[in-house]
Length: 278
Image 1 (tube, rainbow, N blue to C red):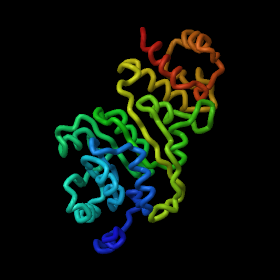
Image 2 (cartoon, helix red, strand yellow):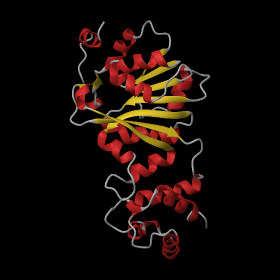
Image 3 (cartoon, rainbow, N blue to C red):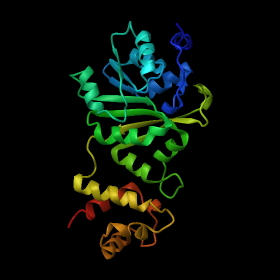
Image 4 (tube, helix red, strand yellow):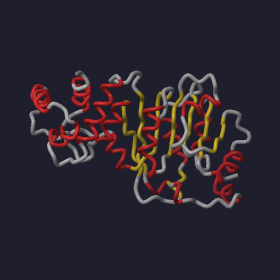
């Protein structure tokens, strides 16, 4: 049965509050799965499977797929779609409220790592990304569909308008690759903007220890709170030794008039190390 017929059979209604835009193009589904280099060795956690079109493609490539869906009205549709698949489990949970490692372990206890694939609703993109990057210790890689504008921000370079706290934090946790742009015409219903597929390959080890990371995060947040200000003015509230910071910036070759958006990740990392020392 075609997906559209299955949705009609179950009287499914699209819900704006869940940001539901289903992919209708088979070639796109294949490209998304291929972006994750999915093989039979892989366990995949799919967030927001919708009607299950991508789930089916993933299941044909992966060893096991766990489909995490918040909309309970989609669960019987997904279960009917996959009643003959032995390598798919469907779970009705809110991705913002669960521990991804625990979900994977529940359905595949021997898992030592897994990948996430997701067509993300735009309204939960940032919190979900960081729920995964910060807390999912067994996560090795993530391939997500995001708003095109967000995709551009995730891989932006210093001194550009797209470069900001999101860029720095995402690249702190993972290598970020903008894979390709997706036309809004390939969805049903059609969203207002184009999308992008972005791939995150998590670093084997975080660049900083916990105390250094705390300083790094505070510096990143403060320096982009008011972009027009100089970096030194933006971080005043952190009560760091100003003369020590001026010395650091001069030695790094930037000077005290630099803005936060001009500093690359490497400099923020060095500041995290330097100013965590008493």
